[in-house]
Amino acid sequence: MRKRLFSLLAAAAVAAAGLTAATAVATPAPASAASCYEWSSTLSRGDSGAAVKELQIRVAGWVSSGEHLAIDGQYGPATEAAVKRFQSGYGLAADGVAGSQTFGKIYDLTSSDCTPSHFSYSEFDDNCGANNFSGGAVSASTAKENTRRVMWQLEAMRHKLGDQPIGISSGIRSYSCNSSVGGSSSSRHLYGDAADMGIGGNVHSQCTLYRAAWEAGFTEILGPGYPGHNDHVHVANDPSPFRSAPNC
Ligand SMILES: [Zn+2]
Figure 1 (tube, rainbow, N blue to C red):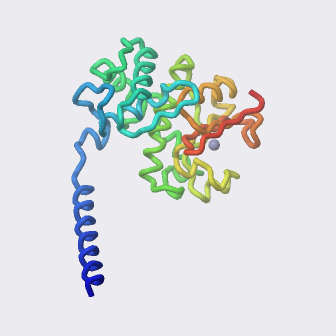
Figure 2: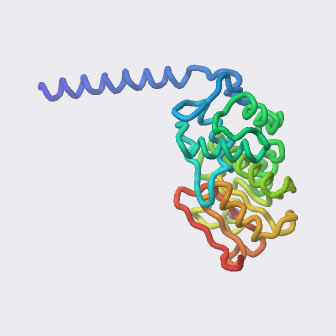
Figure 3: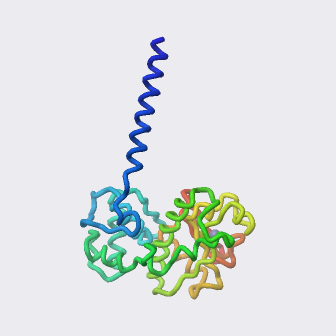
């Protein structure tokens, strides 16, 4: 009897917790965070929260070789170093503190649809003609957000390679799209955190793109000589890092 009462109380506690969580989720985000983010104060090492997370997304392509910046909202040494490289890359004073100059440069680099200026969702959402982010391994909104993060890494890569255009030949894929193009059954394209750069749509050589991706925080990079990758370089933010391009 005592045990059953405890179970009932536990169930009530779980229900109450669920109610609280639901209420918290329903709280509307500020308008600026819902579309293009606007920072309200300077950020530096030791800071944390959503503002740091949005900053991390935009400097994730400015890591050191082979590093991947965790988008965790914690302004630690890796974030500080990435901010310094971003600042230096755009000719700003490289102090590792994100203030008005750094945010101003980020705003300059942001286009009206809130993506980095030299990339747009339409380059990634072909999805075998569906023109959406649906049908993959995650929700369309998650796939779109994953793509936004990839785009900022590519924006960094593009700038480091002398501001020459980078052409995208494939982004998000639904399961049916992925299988129709012969993608791996565990392809990161199903998550929207992958991008292919085709040999025909790029001024840079495939090996140049392959090497640049290693400096832009991508964890999965496949290129010339890797099976199925002689006509494009594939980059992704796979939780299990792997890269290969035997011909580079
Ligand atoms: Zn790919």
